[in-house]
Length: 270
Image (cartoon, rainbow, N blue to C red; front, side, top):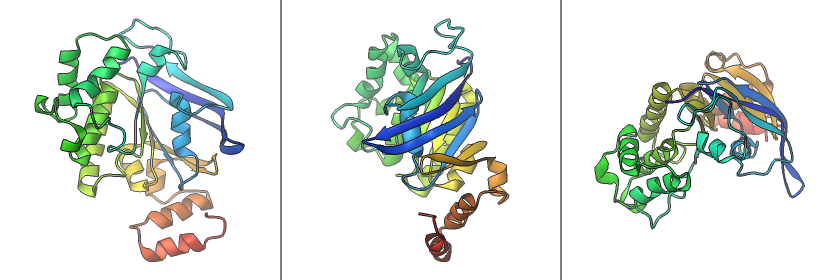
């Protein structure tokens, strides 16, 4: 379906009323890779995703797609940030499946809207195919969000992103609002979709177990800056080099009370 798109972020800076949320951040993601961003609350990781897709204004730096263009549109070069094709090729799945879907719109209308915005025809077939891809049948088309479980709502949010045939999917804590058993189902679905369509993922999470399950490489952030970059294998093998990353690993180890207390007591960890 897709031609393979990567991501290059160079010296990204985002400010809110003088507060620097992201400070000269640079990283690259290869086409078809799954890349994670972790860090404590307020580290700037979700702001990075919003800056990539244009929901947060950049105070400096550049965001660019790398690799080939979209086969569907006959493009040979990656779309330019801010263009309509860029907004089609880069889609985002938000954290809250309860707040990201319009409560007064049916699933059918939720999925039809992006197609109408981008002038894409064949809506009937595309909607049915998108629902099938996320494990929901056509019977869900005319339900409202309040008639769905949290996991079903997030599957609809994923279907809404997929219906435009993106190449880069930005995932902002996509399972944090779900029960543990449903989390695993959604993560397995996302990985299957990535493999099937050759998607590139950039995923934000505070949960190191989730990141190591889905991502091959990851970046640790603190106060808007990169602390270190390492592989999921290195993280699982407890081979983090930075003390801050080691503190995060300790704090997330089984969510044990003593680990959390040690993390809270570590100077500069907050």
